[in-house]
Image 1 (cartoon, helix red, strand yellow):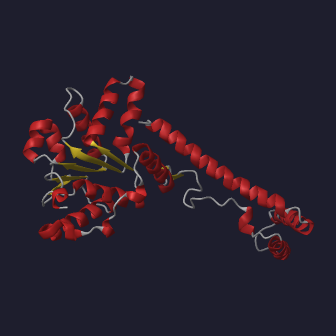
Image 2: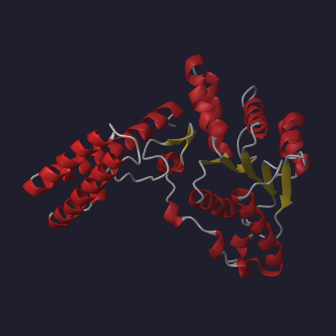
Image 3: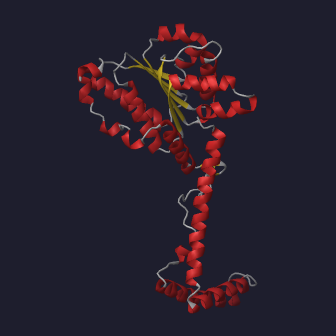
Length: 312
């Protein structure tokens, strides 16, 4: 697992390269345009007039005269740029993201383009192809038979949980027997989150347990980077809780840390499990159980139905 520090550095370099390329294209266009002698003379004349304009008060007779001259030169500039196959916009950097100009931040907060790059890196590392993910708008509810109406309501609620503000609700727990479609539902949720530019981390409980082990044995100065993606993502999806081995002083302790930190920071978490609430309480003890099944901060839904794999 690449740690958050390396991810952020990689993303910053991607955005920096993107920004520099946009600047370079604009500079190349300007150099090309300045090969036109008539355009070059007009370009520098406008610059000189703009300096002269700064010496006079707005609205003065002198300022008005200079503005009129500038406008005449700009007409020439537009005509000559067109002769070069360019527009005035081609002389400005055309950044990929219009919100942050490819800096990655807006008002000191991560821009949606930064989160999109985070998602791309994590998906690549996890081997997930977004194009192969199912989506909410293409679910065939007929496969759920007599449970189709109830399942549709659950899918609608999950989609709303991902994309909309849910007040104090930060956790969504989906539990039910094997094969009723819990993982498929979380993949739809992942796809929806990615389309909404939410920084999303998707993991199985088994893989998350491996992260906990790495965190447990890591050096102190490395620990913050190991858990950070799971602690700070807009949405964390943990699939198949209960499939992992319970390791003493690791699994329960760090799962509690993770869930408690995320709920206190108002970050959303989706968990699927085959375990009943009673079994979860027995397995993960009261601290974790209270975070998963606290109705003040979460939604708990039983997935109905039969094992769809056997039906097929």
